[in-house]
Image 1 (cartoon, rainbow, N blue to C red):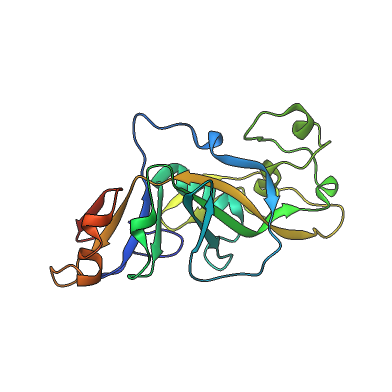
Image 2 (cartoon, rainbow, N blue to C red):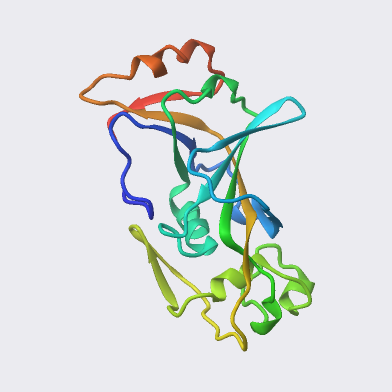
Length: 209
């Protein structure tokens, strides 16, 4: 499986949000409109707490996913698999923990220079009338009506803005954590990961890819 950020690596640890028959539509977990994010880019996932529950925040790099919709549509088809350091405190994650995702182009501050979005995740009438910003506006960025991310393709809705777009970072998606995959290296698990297994309350899966 090839994602926008490439293939998973041997020895890697990946926090998962997998697809399943009992899941909800992706629109239910999109954050529309996105929540502004004032910090700068970060490489390692951030651990944050709210009401004594640990959550993860990931930066989605535009070098892999040019627009937020690229990551959204990959997630729709493949679910989420995000790498964390081997020594990351996985034992702090619970069934209530969530992953939150930030993209540098999640918010179009002058969205009025675009036509109303053809797609609104929340089917919000104000969004569809262009009275408020909509995450669906991100599907209008770029020039291609068919976009490719890793091994998936999807339909976008390119539109020409009347002025240059003013973009800023925002939190645009939240996903539940269904488990952790550890990719075995030469058939062996990393001892640091094995040591966490008994302390973890979310599933830890050993796999070869």
